Structures are given as structure tokens and as C-alpha cells.
Length: 140
Image (cartoon, rainbow, N blue to C red):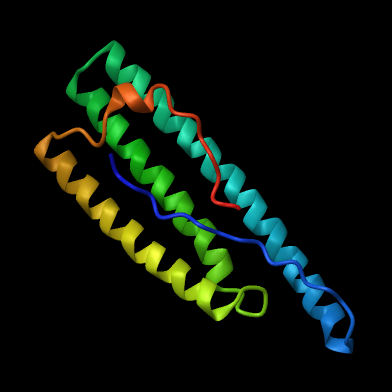
């Protein structure tokens, strides 16, 4: 099974100093973007579940590639979500951002592995497990 690097934590900002109000407003917008991106990530995982079910119903090459590609889409949406945090250093700690960057790098490597699996006609993970998978978001 391909592991998708996860672990976003939304930081709440309290608005006390003068610049804090502007920071709180900016971080509120980023938080909304991250929450919306998390919803897209969860939806893309449902795509993996559906593709797994389709593959199990008809184990042909087309369904195998669609199943593998659904993993790529889910990983890409995870990267998008992580990038919202990475691009918002005033809303996330430097330690968290460093961790998110590591996760993005790992996720990009996973995409390359899946693309190689597609070339070789190899399945990603276990479709029987994924057909029963309950999607979850990155937010903690």
C-alpha cells in the first residue's frame, strides 16, 4: 500500500496586538483554503475506493490503470493541501512547515513510483483493502 504523507494542524491565531488582527484575517482565509482542500482530498480518496471496486469487478488493464491513477490524484490533492500551509509561514510554525515540505517530497516520490507501476502494469496497494477503506482528511 502506498503511504500518503499526512499531518496538517490548523493554527488558531488570537487577535490582540495591532498586526494580530491582520494576521488573524489572513490566517482565517488560509484556514478556509486548507479546510476546503481537505474536503477535496477526502473526495479524491473516495475516488480511490470506487476505482478499487471497479477493478475488483473487472480486473482488466484499463481498470488497473484507472485504480493506480486514482492514487495519483489523491496524492496530488494532498500535496495541494500541504502547499497551502507551506505558503503561509505566518500561520504555521517553521517546524510544521519543514515537516509539510518533507511530506510533499515523499508524496512526489510516491507519484513517481505509481507511474512506474503503471508502465509495468503493476497494482498499487491492495484493491480489496481499498474497496473497504474509510477516507480521512489531513487535518488533525
